[in-house]
Length: 169
Image (cartoon, rainbow, N blue to C red; front, side, top):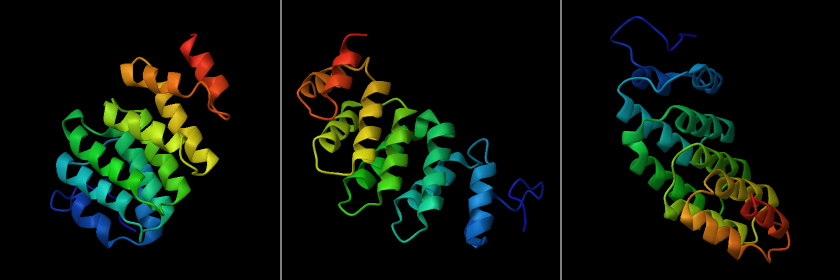
């Protein structure tokens, strides 16, 4: 196993990562404390990994965490577009959706993401995913659309009481 944090200049994260075994890819993602250079290409690779339904869910979740924690502001539009696409996929894994919503909670969001969160809460999806969507609204409750969304949820059987609490604090 070759650690990604290598001093051999020629070997970048981008060239090594795809060649690693599943376990080593998982370890290398968990070891990251920043997005390796070149940032834009690496972010694109991580986003692609997160969106790939054929990939192992755990890998996809780790890729989303790295994006959420370390992504550069300049990559924001690409990331948001990728995560919105992932969340709109009909048969997406619940844990991956959960991680995608968590990633958005760590980043500045626009109305598009918050509207998606409201749609998810009002859909018949798994309750844990709805909970993550509600947490996203809560994380961004200073945003005007989040305020609007919370008001819409006052009558919601599962989240009405929480929405009321958020609006009053």
